[in-house]
Image (cartoon, rainbow, N blue to C red):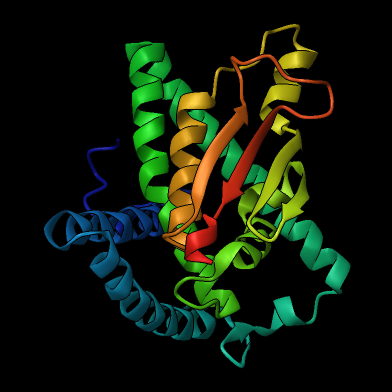
Length: 251
């Protein structure tokens, strides 16, 4: 960097814009570190309770300042520009955000893999799912106003609101009042590997954490069983399949 540049005021227009983008990134990381430390000190449940309070207050404060600085209007706590978009455009935006999320996940995985190897990347990936799955379940329960133990019907609904639902094709097969099967029929990651002539990514260890933790966060009574997930062999119609059950004596 130029020795004459001592503070942001000295930056060019482009570099100052990049500095502002980096500040947003720092806020996101700081937000995450706060959550991780509260989880470490107080446990996941209390950390999610605290997040419910802190994230709402933070959103209101930040959007008030940003709307004033950037000149966009807020309506009912939402940027009016989003409310004015056609529903189709909002759904397309949700799809694009979902693709960005899964790309971000892949970037992190590869950054660890290329530096330290596949084993460490998979360990980090599986541990990350152990935190993200219950958080995502909590976020969905909050937005849908699901009860504490929402049962299998609550889980079905929640699975339809995961970020994954915007990038993959999934389906549900009912087996009766006490269980259902969830299938991932088209997986963006696995299809990309298939196009490149690669074998399936062995995601079973991560999936066991991901689906078990997600289901238990929706309802602690739910039992998760893996029917099949790579490296397991699977039929053409799905890449992974999971059975969710609430034992009859808990119904």
